[in-house]
Length: 385
Image (cartoon, rainbow, N blue to C red):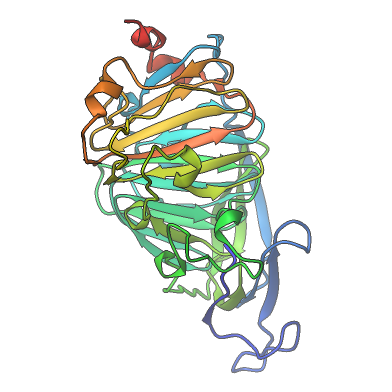
């Protein structure tokens, strides 16, 4: 997210002496992406951020791929994923390819006895149910229903929930997650026709700084393995930073829909992008206003991408029998469109109250064993007359 941000205390120049009140040096760290060419942040620490005391056990979190075919459409009943106390254990990958993991989670408890760092992927956490605080090395963000939390890879964080009733829709991306380039000028500023602007982006405002030594467990994800690594100092020891690489929040309720006289294609709903997939937001909006418009989407063939829709709330006008928490997968290679009767029902309607998140991937998605266990395998038959 190309917005400069500064929090805490920093020196007036990069890479110069910055001393504590007692005369000792603070420890500078460049936190960068794409080698030295991507977005980066310079942070200043009470202690060296390199002090590892012990590497304990490791375990695999690689998804187990189901043997079901991935040529027909599926509906997954997401709320059938059972809640679990631990945040990491609650994360269940349902769809995957070499570019991303798509997961569901229903964590009951906050992360209290460890920190987490994903070195494989940027993370997008969509908050379907619940509220709380994302606590990170670069400051904290309050979150609630409808928030996207974007956490760049390598950021150390914890997550605190206000209650035990939480539902998350998660995407882990091997490529950085950015705002769509068609919404930005050559300086990176969001343009006037963008469906959101910089005022809608919530940046960290609360920087926790701990000057503590001890045994601090950070669970580090690398190549689909979790490693328990013990650090000698508290990871939240940053006294200040500035740059472009940090976590941020954006509410789906602040996405301003683009509408027209006739039905608009899915790219008008785009919210984030990577090199390998896009994320779109379907929000309450006015329907098309041509006198002969059909507000329901036209039939279309997925030739180059798999389409995933995560249904959040409201009336899903193009579908029959879809409920909050359901996921539809319409794979590349076959056409799809509104369910029988949906196009006819939409004629004359003035608005929709639907709320959904869509992922379009450019490589085929594989269905995991977790997904197969919550799948409606007859969904592909629901277009028959």
